[in-house]
Image (cartoon, rainbow, N blue to C red; front, side, top):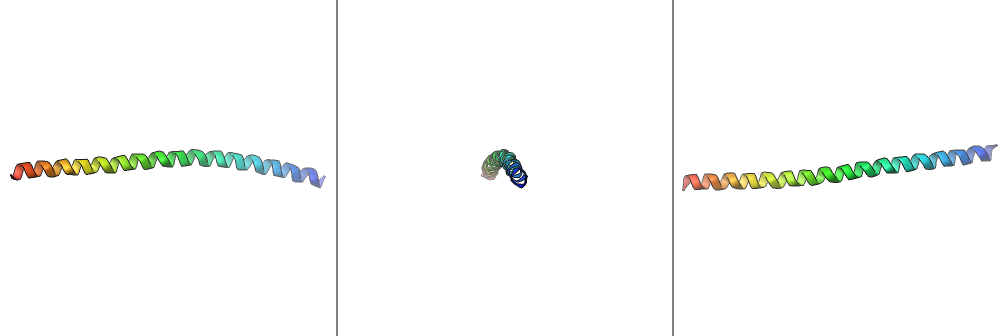
Length: 61
């Protein structure tokens, strides 16, 4: 009886671990996407600042 309960607990733990691992995989993928978007936003802001600096320089000279 105890052995059957122990085997059931092991199976349940394995299923829970599999679901947690799958959920973490989805979260990790979303974090990677967010990091790429953030990097592109930083690059875009640098380009915008450069364009503003060129416009200011053209106006002053």
